[in-house]
Image (cartoon, rainbow, N blue to C red; front, side):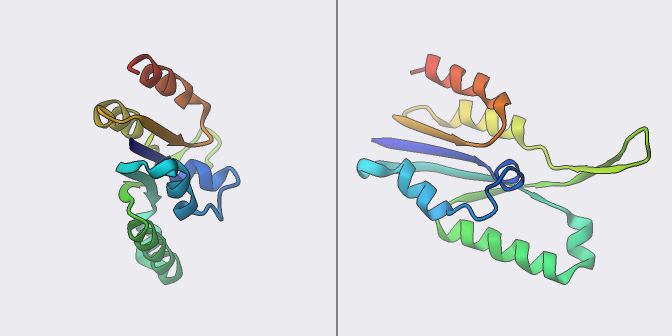
Length: 133
């Protein structure tokens, strides 16, 4: 049995997954002796903050290194900053489209696909993957 895993790191982090055990997530996906074919983790990076904040920079590097040690391919999306009508700055590192396209393109031959996110928008992706079998 072959398995593909796609993790929306930023969404999970901001919705209660700050201490998510990515090694356990991999074990869950690969239960029953399944072979991991693809382990993608989509993570945001605030490059401006990383330049000026050594603690953020080292923490981010350590986190990405740990993900790689667990076998994940880390796909980094840089944070883009926007100012709304009220003058508030908002950062977005939206990897949703990347994750969805990769899942549709990279799951051929997989028996099991795990999409880890707290984002309900991925329901359509899951339905599309189910229709493909």
